[in-house]
Every structure is written in C-alpha cells, then in structure tokens.
Image (cartoon, rainbow, N blue to C red; front, side, top):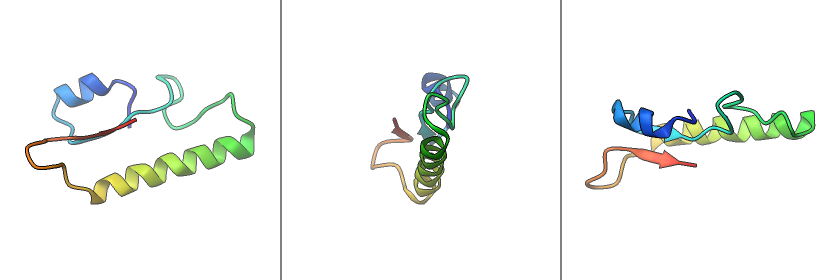
Length: 65
C-alpha cells in the first residue's frame, strides 16, 4: 500500500494498492472517526484480497486505486 505507485512498480512490486495520501496512506483524517475506521478496514480487506489474486496473463503487477 503506497501513494508512490510508480516507484513501487519500478522496484518490482507485484501488488500495489494506492493509499489515500502520502501522509495518511491507510486513513482519511477528514472523515469522522467511525467513517475513518470503516475506511481503514475496507482498505485492509482490499489489500488482503489482493494477496489472493494473480496478475493477468502477460502482466507482472496488480495495481488498484
């Protein structure tokens, strides 16, 4: 999980999930606390789900926004 997706891709990461911002990769401080908690849980679930995926034929990475 990163906001620097081009760097992550350039060093060979095969699963890249774009974060909210450089300072708050897994969170969004503009949201009320209960909403931010739900946002964080959703991002963690997405990251865990990506570990179960395989890049498409001919691709070397899975990149999600």
